[in-house]
Image (cartoon, rainbow, N blue to C red):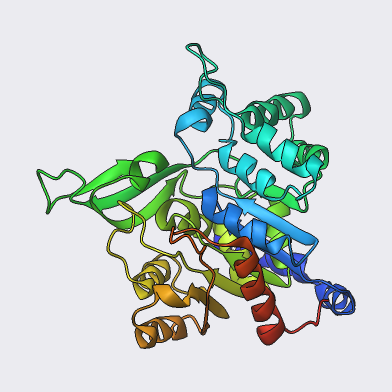
Length: 348
């Protein structure tokens, strides 16, 4: 039996009996939501989702190799904690306790020594990993300390190296395709990213992350850095199998604008085409985009149909003109999608 067959068999075992659990959940007042991503894109999604559900899990990429996370990863051999920290901060409440702890864990030391630019939350997370020897237990404990409105899980149990095939990474050789290594380098490449993969090529998923996806009512993928935060979730075999097998409905949330370097010049539909190349059998239910960021609605609808998805356009950007999501507007868009396209509800 092949490795993929074994994974699928295990996934089907996990889903056995979940229909009864799902039926019971339909009588509850809120959906069970899993959000996948990394960095500020995932933080934006979590800040919105925590406003409409108390049953929220973040599954976070672990390929970061820059800044404080990269230094801790290199020195201690740990998972990069930065994106996990950002997700926890985004789940903090709006009360004094939540906002105080959000500021504390995001605080970076400024010095001329080794602590310069290290984030307090990164050090706290790594300290608990070393104390407890368990990634999930440690993150749950940090979430409890912060009063986080949800759970944060790493997508893989091992730190990953992101590698990309990039055309024109060296401006002096614009037609050459090079292998670019490291999330920080891929995110800032001046060339055109053709594809990405991770090392190791068959990384182990965190079992709790797989179970969360299988047990969800809704799975939200994106927004975020497309090649370095969104697509990596599709490169962890067990996690991809769970995304295909889950009975949850799946939303893809598009970015407000192309990212300089990584997706420079990408149209909204180009983002979908790239996603399809990396996970051709993935199905989606809804593609969410800001109505002002879609110049060609017909082309986006055609690209979404290849996933079996409908397109929902809504104003989700901040009013200041920056390419950032407004948490209240994004929450309203998610809430409307969950009501219009969901199998369960209403939730309020």
